[in-house]
Image: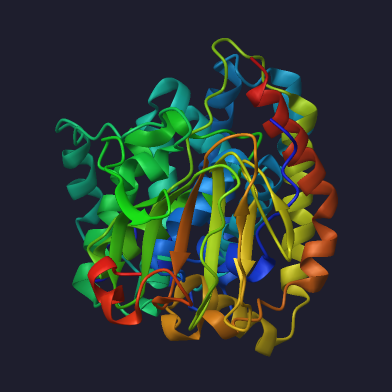
Length: 235
Length: 211
């Protein structure tokens, strides 16, 4: 059952070598109208979109179109991009093919229903969707929903801060570059932590992930994130 | 509220973000993140890594019809799930662990009270109420103890801990926290092994109190 190339253009690409190229292909063909849609929303002003085009990933713009216009075409673009990746992540996490498909469905439904909670000042679509998927996976594995911190809600009518959004996108680009420069061994440790399960008995001897370089690279981004969080909390 | 000065160690924060923390510890971390902007930003940066890894994973093809199945599901009503919200000194994850009800305190002796939120083989989670100036009996534990102050303060050999502060105590520490004089100290504590109190409660009775 692989004749779903309409649903998922990724299937025709060779899995490993093509990962980067595939996402480019997926992103460039259909993104134009989603980008227009996000621009028309008024939440991202036209010049904001232009400014951020270079650094914001298209999935974030699609997610904003889903959030603000309930845009189904943009939602399908999110599905085409993320569903095969979420499935791959869940398979890495030990789910069987059928269960992984079901969880992907759950996750994408949650993306649709929770889109109002997405805040582009603090996350890109991929990070936000990663969290939903990871939590859903834990919920299933342990039959207990993982605890999440209090929701932070953007004040009604708050203007988007283009500079902050752009800065986050730049940090994300730096982060991607840093990840790309990691050795295969380092990448494997990271992927194991983010996609697979560690035995809990090791908790007291956990020493942390090999993130030193990456963390120093995104430190500036942390400052900005923190400032933004502080502003959100001002009454 | 005074500024938070005791934060989460990187290893715990990473383990929380990647879903590798036992439930009891994850609740304490989520409660701290509810109160601490600095650690919230750190956790969101760690999630960015998860997102970047997701973006570059080799995709696995979805089955035919998956997209139609999803679109059909969109039109059904969303599952009605209104998560329990924060209340008073208790952040949302604590209120959720309480099932939305106020704590039902049990006396431990010496004016100290506890409410056990969960206890299983992976660890236990409890709320502790310590009267002002009172010492929690000296204790040690087999593993890691993570304690978040929700109200008041306590001090021990590692310093003073006020609202929002979190203490990470490893098994080699014998510590005796003393509540500050300003009022009762209420904290949320997770342990991955039973606490061993040195005094106050005879060891034989400890299983009764699940401490």
